[in-house]
Image (cartoon, rainbow, N blue to C red; front, top):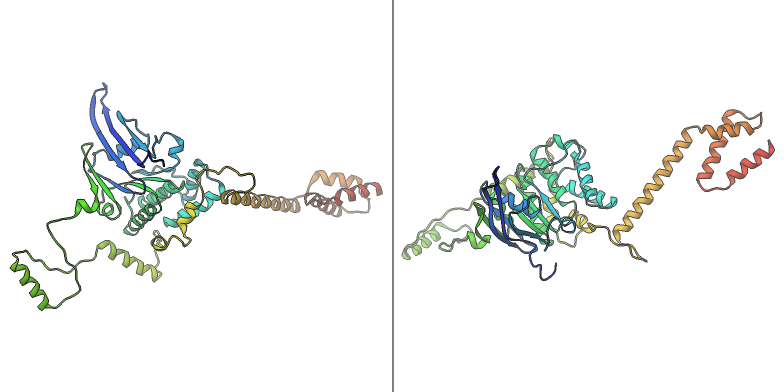
Length: 411
């Protein structure tokens, strides 16, 4: 990104007015919205239903044309394929082909982005394991629950290794384990340089992962700032300490009374989300049986490891989204893997062809051999000789043609 394009996402007086049947302004969904999101930032766009959040996202992605103003992603319009191929989008409702399996769905979107076959295969396996659907990769999408559909939708949004990730209600329908994994993944992706725009009604999730938030109401930005600056209560202080004696507590109360200050002493409570995650993790360690989504815990673990260690996310970002230009002397890693995959596929086709030749009789060759064969030879012997000759030709040997010529002269 150049110095002039210092914002990953930017809106300039963005406005969308939906007209009525006669073309008159009926609903002002978004009005003069100015929003700037820096690279490597997690931004939370909040607001009640009908505040203009989804409309704003659709104008950013060129799914809706603004009435006036502009929406820029990575310094340009998302209608440009060079920009759109660097953007990942998870809509509020996952529009997926219900007759395709999870693996086929990712294969389909990988082909749309023009990913090489070897890169697609590696990313699909990594993404399926990341979202916890490895054991259900061959089930049709139509049989998935809403939470499972959100998981495969997230995998689809990451298949092209995007620089900008736009998530609309990403944890909707997910269980607490999936919600925690989604939040951990967002944090880890941001650390790796991704820019993430998040819309959600679950304010606790936004508070946990976002650097800055903006609140829309009536299509206008009402407040914007960092999470800490907006939520910090500057008129109160909080002191957290280890367990102390009753005598020490009385002394603290006396000191605060002398200052004419309010005093409230309570024991801190654990968050329900943390308690739930620990309970499920203990059940998984005991290998309790379940028919639901299996969360192995690898996501949280690999997101907490150092970047120097090999993990699933490294596999996702290791290969380029677009094919690299071939160099005259050397090839890149992605090209080398592609060539290896093609060679393996060629060898596999050869083996299948040889097996078919061994199992199936070849009529044309049998006819020619039978016509020129000696009377004392049986049909089975002739067929065996013809198969051997053809196999030698396929394997590059030149003796088969010589043998047939000598056999013809003898005849």
